[in-house]
Image (cartoon, rainbow, N blue to C red; front, side):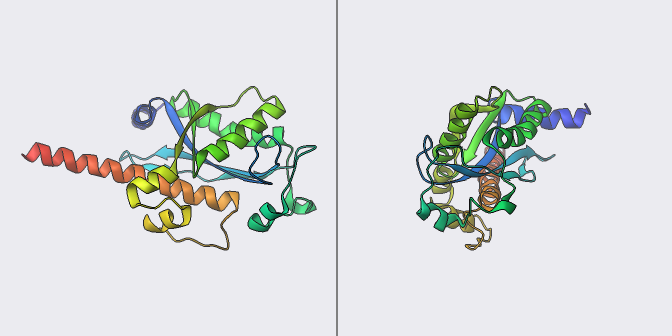
Length: 217
């Protein structure tokens, strides 16, 4: 590995105590991770540039087939606009969907020297709950995510901007919000990733200013 790339990997590996941040958003058939269907999942791996700033990688996503016997609340479909019976969705069974998401995450963990991934989400317990339930149902043995630790951008948005609603926090961070694209796993994951990286990078700049101030004193 090139020495410069090794330096980036070392900084990312130590930035979050060996955890690789991966933004995940799920769209579902309700709020119950054990009984309601997982219908979409998207993930954005976070990397680090030469200046030590976090940057989002391209999103990885798939539609997911409702598992047998799952419940789907029509009100949830009204919000997401998902038609589970649409044959052109290209939905994958849960196991195959997890394989699609997990493969690049495991590769990024290896490249960065991190120990495992940590889920980043807006109200992250919701996304982590559905991810863990799908892992359990499918008997998946190679889940790269920490089973209970996570980073929540609802909390971080409240800290950085006084905003806990995703759309308002994203706008406060200086990004546009398209309500027509919201509640898509891809769009929400990309916006959440931009928000997370902006907040963490903002904190880094504050640390640099503080060091400069102390050094000049």
